[in-house]
Image 1 (tube, rainbow, N blue to C red):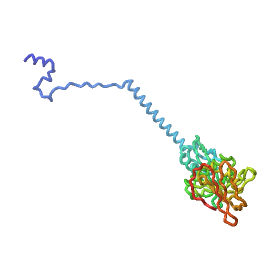
Image 2 (image 1 turned 120 degrees about the vertical axis):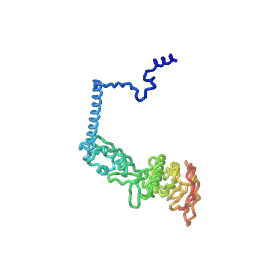
Image 3 (image 1 turned 180 degrees about the vertical axis):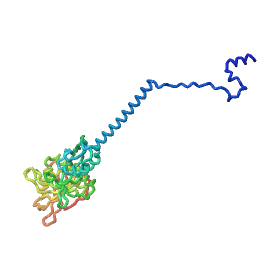
Image 4 (image 1 turned 120 degrees about the horizontal axis):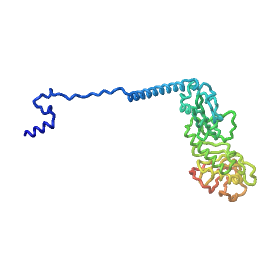
Length: 351
């Protein structure tokens, strides 16, 4: 027992073994406080921090001064209309463009809202697309893509221009255009409706010019009143009165083309017009809307003295032409052809 006590006394300090001494009276081990001196390493650290803070302050001041210069300096301001560079315009007046930028007069070019100005430019009738750029220090560059008119639009006595998207355009005084006249459209019609009908008109012109390159010169008027039936007035197309007199040209003929297969239908018109005139006289109108059938309306059909034989075969075979007896009212002359069309069949109309 004594040996254990002796071992415990050796292992633990006497303060811990003195059970009879109150705990709050025990002596505490003194804590050594080390005081660091303000040495060279500390000075270097504080100096670096001071340099960084000074650099940040100087940078912030420089940025503020630069921003103030760029946003308020007269050297950055749009002070004159000559500082607006305009390219790509032919019919768009420069005055119309400068009027849009008039609110930015005296303002820094960096404060001009480019997206807003571009939208205002594209609202001009003749502007299809516009690009607006800043050219430092104090210039604005505007590049315009103008709309391309494809026809004249007649509304009553007014004649304006219209593009392939149905946008109405004012006629420039100095321009000289050669287009067919379009009717059946007006400014009150929804633009989507005008665009759809003008798309059909452009498709028609492209297809007939594939048949004959100079076909556009012979189409004087196109009626788009019916979105499913394009009606064109054709006049002066060489060869329409037959091979024997190809230099002559027939009078104006109203042709109803429907809404598709314009290439094949126009080819049928060219191939058979001479035979229709020889058999029925002067033709007033031709209806090509029906599949494998053509309705020909003569102006004043002359009564035949003898039964008319079948015409010679052509590229599109034509059936016999029937006439009325003298004194009777002229009926619609009908002829069948083999052109492959996809137009929907409608009831026959007599004029």
